[in-house]
Image 1 (cartoon, rainbow, N blue to C red):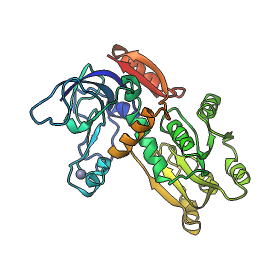
Image 2 (tube, rainbow, N blue to C red):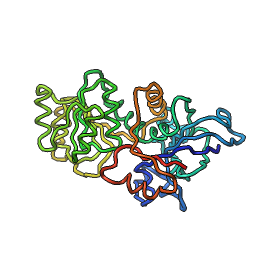
Image 3 (cartoon, rainbow, N blue to C red):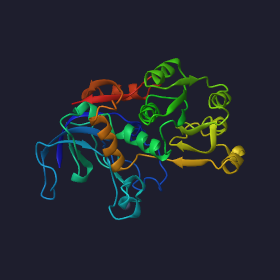
Image 4 (tube, rainbow, N blue to C red):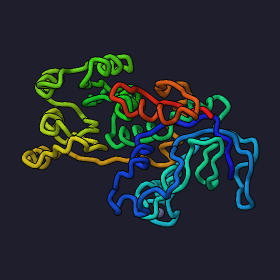
Length: 316
Ligand SMILES: [Zn+2]
């Protein structure tokens, strides 16, 4: 199926592919992206040509890409989570992606896009928001839950704040920069706490109990994060650049029955659910700006900058 791209957006995975960052073979068994390579895992547009095997979509349909596909036959694929499939295949990583005017990909990568969602909005949703939604769901939030989102940045963690607020949660955050603290507050964070001593303050603010869930993307504060959690609370993790794992605090995991959940890209069902939230008007993806496709190199550097907040769109 060939889709004329109306808008694409930049993700961290794109720069990982560009820089040749090695990933363990058990996660991505296909090895590095083939070269020459066109990056881009997020995009939306209009179907302009279909092959003989295409049965569900037709020319003229508006669609958005779900980049991940599995073998279709293993336990994870049956549960709708191709990201865990040993044969996972990612458009924009394992073949050319969406930094392009036209993209060719199998029909099962494309999700119909309702008229009420614009192409630019749609292109900002899959990578970040499916990930964030998967993280929030794993924490089992309920109305009145309390959560901590440490070291908010302009990516998945900001989206987690939006989605946790949609669940009726009270959201605490920490931030490394004043800009990020401001943005977290604008997104609905109830309080942004200082990095120094936030666990003690959270304990005080929750009557000594601790928060129900922590959403960590850095792995720099685990001793404090564990001290912030209530007993039998959930720590959801999807990043480890800080590499400070709490080996000396392992007793907190079992004595306090803490649940640690890893999360990654999210399932196709979670993508459809988050798209439904956008369609209903309850969720608006954060967009940092849009740039013509010819400026993709500059846009990629901007997206990697520490003050980038939200999605940068590429328009062909
Ligand atoms: Zn599979």
